[in-house]
Length: 170
Image 1: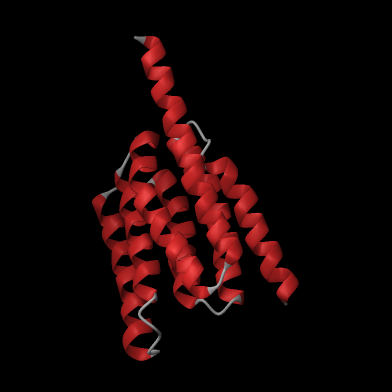
Image 2 (image 1 turned 120 degrees about the vertical axis):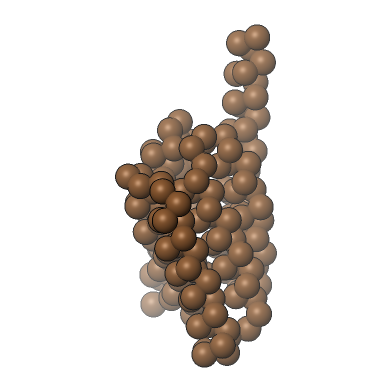
C-alpha cells in the first residue's frame, strides 16, 4: 500500500508540473484534473480525507469547467465542498485541519470556473496552493507538500515569464 501512496503522489507531482505551464485555460483544467485525481488518491491512501475529498472535487470541477462556467455550476461545487466539510467536522469529528484543505478547495472552485484568464487563475491560486502546502505539511504528506511547493514555484515562474513577454511587446 505504501508504494501506491508514493506512486499516486509522484504522478500528481509530475502531471501538475505541466498543468501550470499550459497556455490556455482549458488545457490547464484538463491536465490539472488528472493531477488532482492522482493527488486525491494519494491523500485518500494516507487517510487525509479532507485533502482527498477537496482535491477529488477539484478534479471533477475542472473537467466540468471545460464545458460549463455558469454561476449555477459554481454554486453546486461550493455547496458540495461546504457540505463535505461540515460532514467531516460535525459527523466524523475530524480535526480542524480540514478547514485548511476545504478553504483551498473553495478558492480553486471559484477560480477554476469563474475566471477565464490563465494569468488571473494563477494569481488567485497562489493563496490556494499556500493553504494546500500547509495542509500537506500538517497531515505529513511530503509528496503533497512538494506538489504544492512545485505549483507555487511554477506559478511564480509562469507569471514572471508572462510579465517579461508583456514588457517586451511594449
